[in-house]
Image (tube, rainbow, N blue to C red):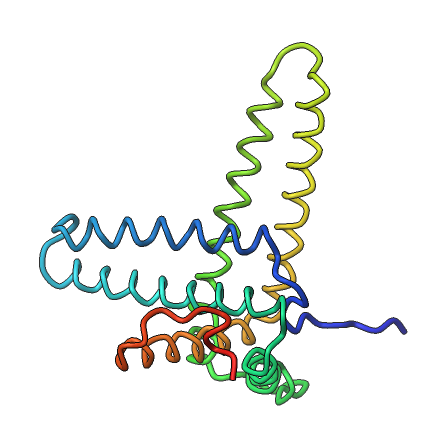
Length: 200
């Protein structure tokens, strides 16, 4: 019987994942600026949308910090990884036992923010591949190399999405803890943390 190793957080930062998260942060920050300027439905609905965008940006920034910390694996990163395994895994699940419905919804909402960032990046690369596929005649060597690289990026992003989906709870725990660390640092006037700043 083969072992079924589960994802426990990247051992090294993924360039594609970081690029996807950072691009999504930029996009959501632009949406937030537009909504704050008065776009969208007036009143309560607009305030709700602003709050949702702020929460999503905080989660993405938390995941970005986690990915960047994976390169050096400092003490805070290892402790957070352990928390993700302990509280976000399926260790308490038993055959035939149902999870509370609310917990599943919370897990899905936290995980889906990161997953949508990867999905947006995946769509971008697939769009580039489609554009190359519309070219007529034989492709030059540099375009063939570009197409091969894009195929590799698409495969990697699809794989990362599958691995993340298998352990959505761990992503939710990590984002929840780190986003609150960032918030507390903001209250204390310490600004946006960097990976090195979080080191003990």
